[in-house]
Length: 213
Image (tube, rainbow, N blue to C red; front, side):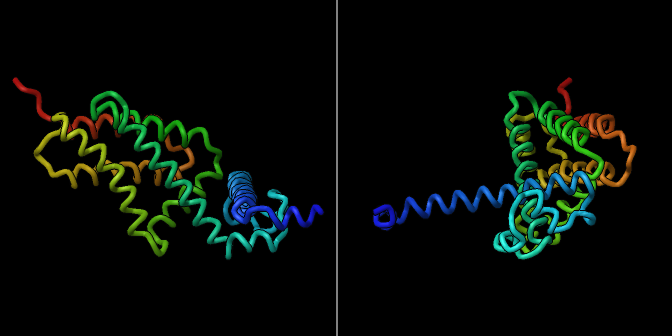
């Protein structure tokens, strides 16, 4: 009887449950991988250890990810999504462009300071994958467009200089982000908070519309 009732269950309900289960397992693998990378480093983290931490079979891992590199690519995508969300959060701040730029860079510095030392390897890998994966143009464009949204909004409100084009200002903002992240990831004692504040101040000063006399 129980088997009969299962056979009568709508296919969509069963599929939904399977998909939720697959998503739960995939998320557990991803979270376990990030934990291990932050504990041991990127190279030292092995697939078998990720399986043990996530409590999944080796075969189950490869049902979700073709290789460790594919796993890292998805971690990079999640990292990019988080970065895009932080940029959008800065853009929505009810303040000037100066305030939005300051909010973004201070938040960036705070997030990096809260991460462990091994996170530096992961950050480097995320940046590399964004620009070296097969869809790098799409991923890099998403990041570019997110920074550009702050610039466009500032230009529309009139608090940015019109001496330079929007593309130039966007690239200045994006380039400053990359420099800060690269230096933090590759210099153990890099004063990220101090440099982030100084960078935000410089960008805001150089982009600001001239004051009327």
